[in-house]
Length: 74
Image (cartoon, rainbow, N blue to C red):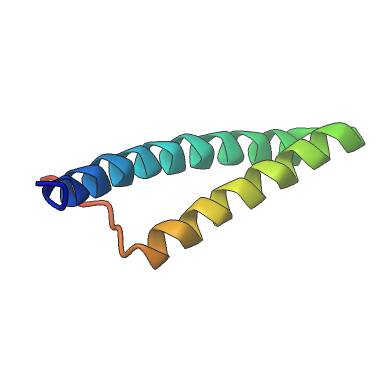
């Protein structure tokens, strides 16, 4: 009975990981576009953009290591 939960928990946390990955990708793309459009971005804003990129790629590598893929419905 204890081992049956493992698959269910993995699916739940995989879904949470994908949700966070999508959120961080949107945030990173938003900040990247703002930096590109900005005339003179501040150091703090540049650091936030780099941190968003690092967080996204960290979760991307985690998803790749766990063999998680986004299935496109259509």
